[in-house]
Length: 555
Image (cartoon, rainbow, N blue to C red; front, side, top):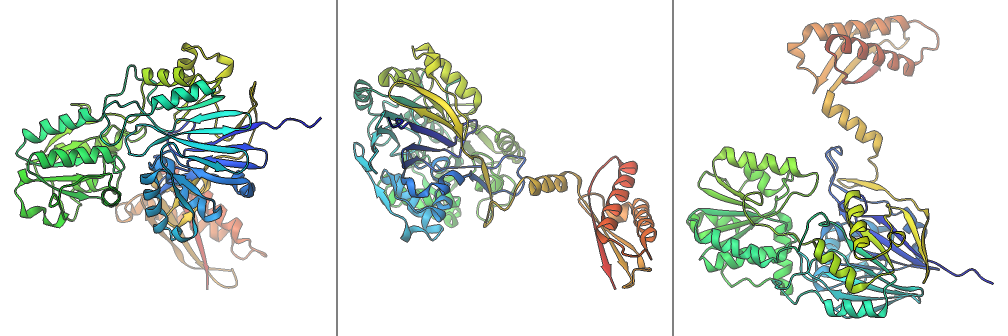
């Protein structure tokens, strides 16, 4: 008797981390993907622009892939698509705004003409191969057109909630389709994959409308120019800022490339309602009095090159912040960004302007569900098996405990790691094996060409600096033409450390002289000897260990 096939759920990103969300769901010779995101680099990744998923497993099985299904248009869910689609060209399915954002992204990478993008409406059921059908179910999040995915497979239904919260008074559209989720629960849900981001928070996430009320209050009571930093992708937040500006007689200027792009796309697709004459070019802000202007900008996470950061450090070409400005930071720090945003806030306080941020007042609400909402989804869907996703390890563990508290047996809850395979049939589930998964670093146009060794060297250079020792020897290898030259970068200022540099020259010269005239002189051995001797000398003199780079020239 042939062995029954198993459904495989394989997360390749998004677990034990915030970002890089990507899950492969496989049955027999068919695979569908849920999302394809990116992550921002950590502090220990100097020079890296973004982090994407290792898709080696998908590249090996590219003929099985029937499509990519997107839950929403945030970067941690769509940002890796261009890099994936360069090597694996498959259809991409998503709601209208999500696909609109993907179109813009693919256009930048010159991929738009070769990729099939399919816009779907809520309730649409997509047939993907012979084994899968995927239904898009309306949810609420901090970006419009977010969806949960109800995936029917030969062994049962898998529901992936994407990022969600339950907002009974959403800014655009209707509230999450709890009715349909309840119907899916009655049909029977084999496995639920659910957002764990806010599992530490009790109660319910506040409605986005509460932020709009706070904006109204601040705008009414301020005569200053107002600058609001928020996530570019939070279309609802940007809409509320614009609404408050209009109600209080202010023009709106937009700063930051991603903010400009999102606003343009959202207006074009009808997801933003901006009265004619409200938007002005950032170049024209000086034509208006301070109390007539609102600037919406990127930089709510303190990103080094973002518009708000450049404004705070007086490095922005078009906006100069003064003590007469009011700055609103309408976001909370993503884990790992706390120091960056704190530094920006401190710089703003040094300028003397008024700063309002979430620690002081309610200028931000989350787009992710808190404990009571998570429990409600579990109660509606009644899954046989539960897989917490989208979070660091503590989030996943706490979400598992939350699921157990509403009656899901502990043995039916699975905390996975990226690359681990969960095999399911209609009655059982177990973790069985793993595939290659990890991080690929993007640096400029280079994808994957920066690894641990390069990062180690960059950290070494950034922390300890560089000493270059240049030695010129004769063609016959019998004499040193001139005494070694020493170049220092990021270690000490040479003119103020002549004694130390003279010592380095002497040590390098001794190494070279000890090798001159020997038959079959090995330059690599000479270089390693110079490196070791100079490094030892510098450490003895300074207790520091710069990178040593010996260069030998032959004349």
